[in-house]
Length: 436
Image 1 (cartoon, rainbow, N blue to C red):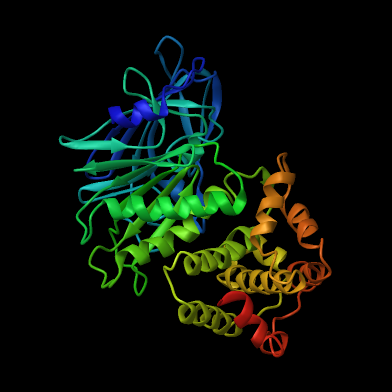
Image 2: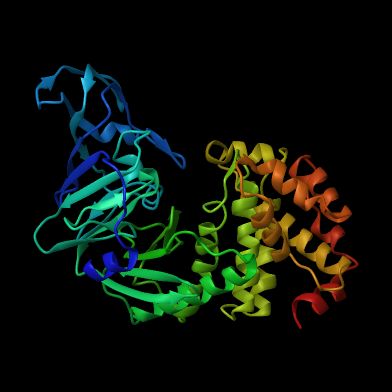
């Protein structure tokens, strides 16, 4: 922890709310938040990424005044509390549930000898930057990308993006990535050396710095943790939050090439450090930061030789089959708004296929000189201020006639995709542009 703290330095801030989290291996957290601005309304998030009832875990809520006097507090609903005016400290208990396949990558959990704590579902909403002190069971330690002070407290300027890895036998590895530093935190035992994680992530990060021509303002971190719950045919789950990628993998999975498997996962998750996490765009543009990311990750995996040409084509075929298996009666913008309620993966499938068509069109029209990566370069060069994500990205796509047609028909419009017709006369072009 000391080495990691020295890399990130110590935040220089004025007085901020102070949080103390006492962790029990059973999954019960006792949390105290003090030095708050006086208030009387306290709200905890109750849903995230389709996971409902998160705030139901908050119990035993208490309120205190400036001199430590206990004040009246009432529970209004799940995660909603009201206290006497002038409350400056609150205490409560969060009883974490056993993780499930649906929520293991999205909310806080503790299982066995490790756990992932996400401050977004542990703290009241709308807190400014906070200092976090953590008390752990014997032999447990904590790893996070946040900076620390001389007392060992972690500082989170945006608590809703804070992630902490806790558990026994946590290992830390760091390495340079251009002008930045990547940290890898590893829990559990794996059928490969820990350094494989650092090497695979570094290779992908360097590729994306070159692709976007934009250096991250934050120092990225990767957490590799054994998947604590069976998830069916998928042997991993991941979440990118703030500057941290949490990767949950089944160490017993029958992977013949772990380096390639980790690299493939990182091609998607690490791009989220840029899109949407480094953009100030607003609104529901999930079709872009999920669908286009899936396609860009596939091209990157091919470029870095994590996959071969056959797997590249096969993946596009599987995505198209998945797209055809479900109804498509929404624009991608409308589908993005309903991403967590519809259960239809059209945001991912159709978004990825539209990205493929755009990449093919721009390569064709430029004779292979331009590609989808140029869109990311323009995006980071031209969108430094808060703006509507759909407006900004559609404007950039529409800079070419082919891009404007795709945006009008499939992103803003409700036209269904027919790849066989769209690609009927472009087989030779596909071979010449992608597989040289």
